[in-house]
Amino acid sequence: MPHDRSPILLWFRRDLRLSDHPALHAAAASGRPVIPVFLCDEGVEALGAAPRMRIGLGVEQLARDLKDKGSRLILRRGATHGVLRAMLAETGAGAVWWTRLHDPLSRRQDECLGPQLESVETRAFPGHLLHEPETLRTGAGGSFRSYAAFFRALRTRDMGEPLPPPSRLTAPASWPATERLEDWRLDAAMNRGGSIVASWQQPGETQARARLDRFVAERIGAYAGARDYPGRDGSSRLSENLAYGEISARTCWLAALAALHRGEAGAEQFLKELAWRDFSHHLLFHSPELATDAWRPEWRSFPWTRDTESPLVSAWRRGRTGIRLVDAAMREMYVTGRMHNRSRMIVASLLTKHMLTDWRIGLKWFEDCLTDWDPASNAVNWQWVAGSGPDASPFFRIFSPKAQAKAYDPDGDYARAWIAEWQAAPPSTALSYFEAIPRSWHMSQKDTYPAPVLDLAVARRAALAAFRARPWDQDATGQGGA
Image (cartoon, rainbow, N blue to C red; front, side):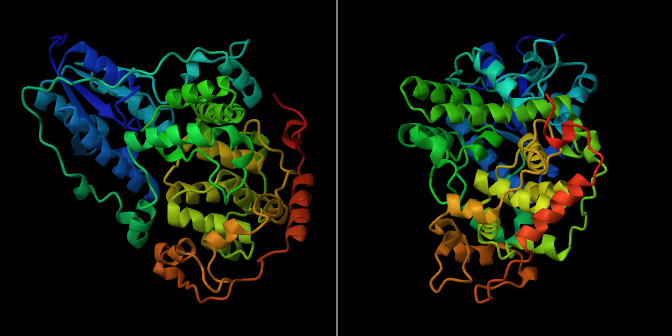
């Protein structure tokens, strides 16, 4: 049994903060030396280009925050188990503590740590979600399949109070060597677009907290309605910070709950969005296949188009469909690393329904391009739109981009912000797109904006015909299910 004064290796992952961090709080309270470590391991290496760049920005800020506490962040690259074993031998640490994650790759890492590091204490803490997946069950003892029922159950739970940041962290007698973050070149795959996308990010705990405070003070009251308009500043923009754990979901939940008690009606919708994030992670925990396969078995034989380089998919990917709301959304993503939530639903619907393209093609593209990429939310949201997932939007609910633009971008502000070709004097946001995209696309602001690549009405009828031709059971039509 390790001596209780031996150091603790505190492995940071998607929990890049000091406040409301259960593992860090417990390590600081133990009085033992704490060695914070971040690994460029198989989980980081597997990230798409944009999230890999973005996690590097968060790690850079966490290192500064730890330095302010008189501590350090040790950086090492390599396979998780091998690096941690080497660090244990190097430092004499008697424990490895970390925050649980619930995607399949992270779970495999967690499950192997105990057997691989059996000579020391290994301990996984909660903190990435509002509640751990095993703790929230239906009355029958199973996992939730319906979001409405999940939210009702979650709404009654006591979230507890956020934990304060540690006032100090005990340093080890000597610090192990650290690698240099810049040597990892986490932004390399972004190529020339990296600096443009990075300029739109607000990494780190301080900026995350300021973002939450501004949102609660200025916009949460109108959030329920304003969040639907992509051209307005109506959302919290906290998705990138939540994705990397730069602020805890509990901190956001309690701030919204306090606003609701003050009479801010929009706070209820924000609570629902936080709950949807938890719901997505609970679904992925109980059904790991969600990340790679249709959750509803009857959808696994649906005749999706799987050609990743078809003219339609290429037009969709490049923001050249000729459908302004869709193109604006895709271009917003290439410039900022984010996409408005309503826009995400519209571009996903166009790909999976009007174009009858496999949702996994869109999922993989978002995985590479979104700086707020989240493994559970990305998978669940794509399957929700496609109709193949839990509690999904039925397939026959097809978003009309024209109707959506008329309702939510009636003056064309969003389209003008991101599409340059049809404007005499396009704004810098629209022009930045041509600096961010690959040169191999051979696109210029001087290009003629394209006519629509498909007839939306004809494509909608074809999608419905393909849907009705299948031998569905009741659940697949969206008329049944839990």
